[in-house]
Length: 478
Image (cartoon, rainbow, N blue to C red; front, top):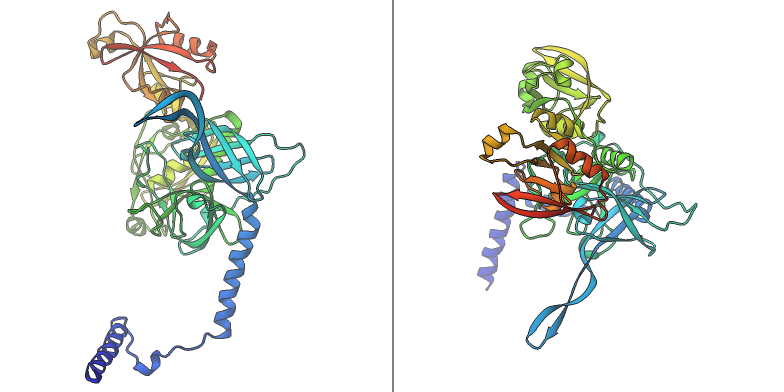
């Protein structure tokens, strides 16, 4: 027994020495004895703990728990069988978090938290419960804005101040607060792992989704969605949105939407009930930091202009292919995703300052930003119909020849905006609408007039041809 213990002890010492040597520092075994922490180390740790404590105490009152509720058929048991009854009951179909950003009851959260809801219930940290109305949602950024109902006149609800997501650096401490797995007001901490992350696979995401995420290793779990990501001053720097996971829980890779995007989306929704996106008419692409250093630019990445649309705002401002965009309105453009996100929060009709590099010569140009939907519609010969939520085109002779249609009058759906009425109703590209509530549609302009006059709260019936088969789809407000 003694012989076995001796061999085990020698092996243990050898393993420790080998591990230290592999780390680059070979120390005597005696030096491995634990040393007491210095007063300075303890004080630093306590200071960080106090910072986390201050953030939690100041922000927790403004973090809310959100329940999405739908009415569904009640299921009843009939012997061995379970069948739906004629009675509808309310069921919780989703949970998430949100953050109060205005004392009147304005809350920022994720689109996927409230998307399935017919009714939205909100519970505050102090136990108060409210019903909320949907001010607007944006599937392309996974953001939504809701408003508390029945807030007493003069009542001032707790809020979280906006911070500066652009000022975050990789390695900065951040704090996440939310309701993971229903455990309300759970506080976790971590660091900023990366910025401007794109290509994150999210449920329901498509190629149009705008991604410019803050990546963090602060623990984020199901139920954290829509909650705040905060700096150590207790200011909002992001809206927690997603995790990368194999097992369904936190694995140290979480993603938050930067607050400058969230605030821009919120402002647009509160102003017009939807997100109105900017457009300048150029095709961007990433460029490496190494290439920029060759050009004498000290910046982590940039945006290369691949092409410029004719007569677009970018063309009129003098931007050319192979120009490198360094900043838009002073914000560094480190990646193509940063550029797309910047346009999302730049209102159409405004003038944007573009700092570009042409060859090795820096220039600043002013671009008058256009409106994305109408510009895209014009580029394909169509019309964006706001109340429909998509781009349509009159079925003329060229469309008939292309689709091999005979004597069909109506409009063809070229694009259904993600999260718009058409998308929610189930319209697809290529659908041909021939009538609205029984009234034949001859062209896109007539379709727009009919929808402008319609009561979408009551809903309207659209007669549709899809794959040469006739049917109908009901269009109504959510």
